[in-house]
Length: 31
Image (cartoon, rainbow, N blue to C red):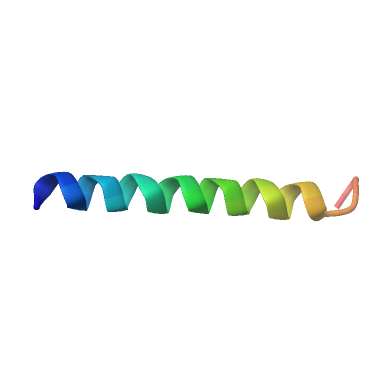
């Protein structure tokens, strides 16, 4: 259970980080 919870937490962090990076790259320069 602990391993699954850890994997879920890591996956969520990776997805969130990727989403923030994607959104950041999509913003106009100087925003």
